Length: 492
Ligand SMILES: Nc1ncnc2c1ncn2[C@@H]1O[C@H](COP(=O)(O)OP(=O)(O)OP(=O)(O)O)[C@@H](O)[C@H]1O
Ligand SMILES: [Mg+2]
Image 1 (cartoon, rainbow, N blue to C red):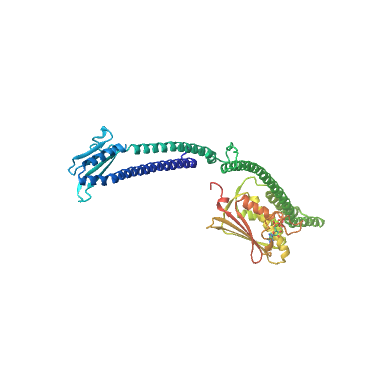
Image 2 (tube, rainbow, N blue to C red):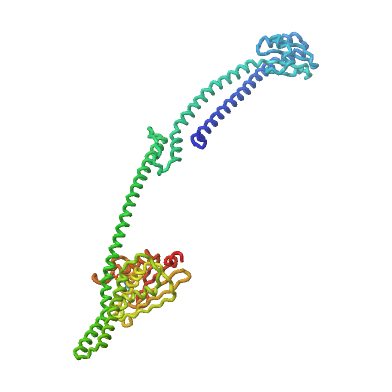
């Protein structure tokens, strides 16, 4: 039995309370009855004494012995309850005595077997002198019988009451047992417990049945919600997996598209890079033809021209290599400096920047090695420079400048790279959209809107840094923050 159970405590309290109240009532009753009965017996004795005492004192005062003797003897005879009557002289000598039975001759000597005793002084009514003492022994049989009967009566009533009470306690305890069982089950309940707990349905409409049945419904509801939740969770996981897969697919397409876009631009860039050497080659060929026409083509002159042409061709071939290097995807991370990245970037976009008369300023204050995918990082700069280049097309500025600045931020232990231009800046209204995929303000055929999305993905997802855009006085500014621990080669 659980000693903390409310039902147990309640039952115990009720039992103790009821039994003690019953015992108290019985005890008090017996006590009151005894006192009252005793009082009434004593009153009877007093009445007898008050009746005979004036007669006795009168007769004794006149010296009539016989009537006194008769009166004393008549007392036990007339009332069976008077066991003995005596008159003593002032010197304690027995003057008269009478008994119901010979057993009681020395009743006044052996006082104390529960009978009532009474003693009154006999006073001379004329002189007021003390004539003697009247003693009475009065039977307690009636008193004993009545109190005995009363006690019996009480016991006979209390026992059935206690029995009924015990039955009541039993029923009460039984009736509340569903609550007790329910509380034990609820205490061990956990929704993750596969087997769960079983609560039986109760008939009836009383509070206990309502609590029990409501708990049953609640538990069933919780179980079904838990089941549904875990089902939902499984579905959700599947959905998330699908979404992630979709996203990856989207990114793959994006990268593909961006590479194609870049390829288009690259071809443009190659054209720029080759324009000048192709012109020069053309001039050399024309020169050779002219010399031949005028018979001035000496072996020496031909060799010189071929050397010049070969140099141009090798320069053009270098350009192709640069571009091809950039287009080869990096399979592994390697260690490089920002200087190298900027040089590679300028090899690719330099010629087209020159043709647009855009001046590039580079200021790298701290030479820091970066351990990452170099070509991806290069693409970030190409994308940014291309954006600036596009912005200049609408700015009609003459002093077109792109500034690349870098330093080590000691307090934050990170490499800071700033790419800024003076092409007018990014309209504030679109500032929070420029990193979204496919967001572009350029004509459909000119921009795909993935340049900055790609740049952000490379800096933040691949390199663990941060890329932010803002505006300066005259143009846009891109801020790259690369925490040192993210770009440091492990073990260095
Ligand atoms: N330096 C800049 N100056 C002004 N606006 C800029 C600059 N860089 C980006 N933007 C704005 O941000 C938009 C998004 O740039 P993002 O590079 O992502 O796409 P895009 O250049 O339009 O197209 P894509 O790069 O794919 O050819 C641009 O359309 C342009 O409006
Ligand atoms: Mg762009």
